[in-house]
Image (cartoon, rainbow, N blue to C red):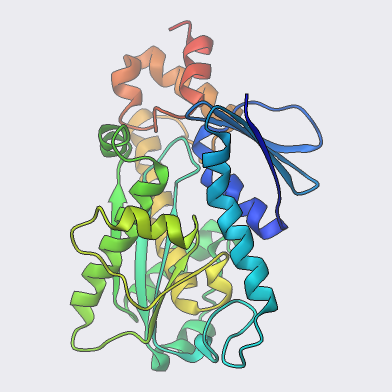
Amino acid sequence: MNTTVLKLSKVQLDQLKAHYAAFTVPNKNPYTLFVAKKGGVTITGYTSGKVVFQGTNASTEAAIWQKENTAVRDKKHSQKNNITTSGLPKDFAQKSIIGSDEVGNGSYFGPLVVCAVYAANENLPYLKKIGVKDSKMLTDHEIRHLAPKIKATVPFQKLVVTPAKYNEIQPKYNAVRMKVALHNQAIYLLQQKIMPAKAEGILIDQFTTEANYRKYLQQEKNQVTSGLHFVTKGEQYHLSVAAASILCRASFLAELEAASQELGFTVPSGAGSKSDLVAAKILQQGGIKLLANYAKLHFANTQKAQKLAGY
């Protein structure tokens, strides 16, 4: 068995954890952040920042993150005056930018929603005034209140992949390839909407390395390749990403509410034990066919729910 060990920063560790969200398995070690199994490789992230890759293809899987780690170290040593510590151009927050984000990737129930927003310089003061910021810092009520105001202010393009559609394409599209395709398409369609206006840059809330993003991008029809910037926690660097995250979250919440009304009981977000119990209840009602309409079946929750339901 091959083993590769990396030492990552907290930001990189959070990014890696999100990347493998769909492949996590139960873990009770208090010093372990997560354990994931993908393609014969076991990935274990520790609170110390150490990540261990074990398996036949361990070195190949780890190589993706080794490149990112090297890039970050090189960036820290860069002394270019026109580059900020985030790697973005100077005064980026005041520029007219297309920002994109997604919601739902780590939730067993509900859709995967990707949204791109074009926030022109003249719209930024108003977005800030109404309280646009990272959707994780807002209550569900605030998100529902802000979403219509954002839609009335800035051009946007939203793409929603329902669980049924997700399950249909997931065997062909892994989690990263699917998000690359959706981010690219949302950005491309938004660019068409705002013509002849042109954004001064494109900020994607980073979910994989730039090299990995561009690798999957080569498989897409309408490739947006220029002006791209990738930063984790992108909502902190431009309001376009914050606005996009709010629109994504609002749409995701609406879909969960619709699912709850259809089934007659609350459908939760996330991928915890509550999701296992609800999935088991759905299985007892209509089997795997019904569950496929509401959940991402490749998550480990499906097997747990089947055991609970005696299915």
